[in-house]
View 1 (cartoon, rainbow, N blue to C red):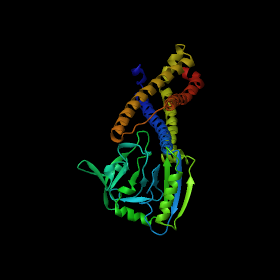
View 2 (tube, helix red, strand yellow):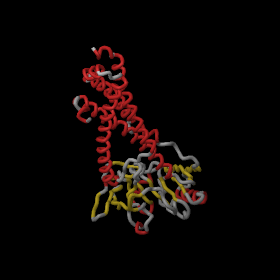
View 3 (spheres, rainbow, N blue to C red):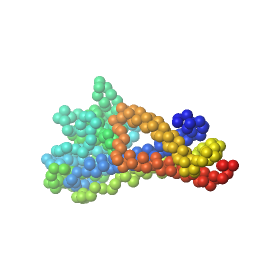
View 4 (cartoon, rainbow, N blue to C red):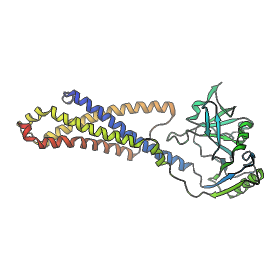
Length: 364
């Protein structure tokens, strides 16, 4: 059977290559969708039940962060917004988050270690937790990773990341109690902060009142706007799909479908004599088309097996290096099967038309 299929070896090889590219584009599209929705799930899981967001504007150059979490006994408080830090190993400014108070579990998913401030050993030292992407820049010494932030060395005490998505991979998480003076002083020039108070265990109203008073104590002229956050925020799915060049993969799929149709036409041309002989022996158009469909299906199955083997090897290597792997649900599997048969049907359309249209000429 295999010998029979590959006797037109050149067309068969071209067809397999075309199908391989089609599978790559299909899997890439599904990977992009899975990645986008996995990232959105991670974002939603990280949102606490009770949240109050404070937008703080100040012009007096005061240290607003160090004492913001003072006296807080419920919930967690984190500063975000325009906060950045200069990482020497990366050579640029990077967005970061500064934890001001920890009283319950944080939403960060850890690969190893912990968030700064969660361990008593963090007291009095400079430390940071990095996302999986950022930790690659850290330098290791005596089995401990270090990162230079604002010209001061910080110990990496935790690596943040999830096996499901890259939502956490670019995080730099600091703690106001585990920061160097140079970084603290740099934040005096920041005139706008976003401070989030959140909890999954209790109301954050009491914590909000305490943080509000702390901020006014640091700068009585600051403008503070508080919003009780009830919504989950804007979905990140659309933005992720736009960044991942979904349209390019779709265009590649369409191009390869057209290419497969052309190759299938050559397949029929090469089998012209064979088809004529079959007609002499009484083969019907349906039987001839069935034989062609069977051969194309076998070629597609061979291609599918080759691709899955390569895909499994690549995923294993990625998992060893990053700890991430693709998650496939029933919808994704059904989508792959559906695209597989759709490709086959589209590929067969032109040969079927040619066989029925030119039946009398083929017999001659």
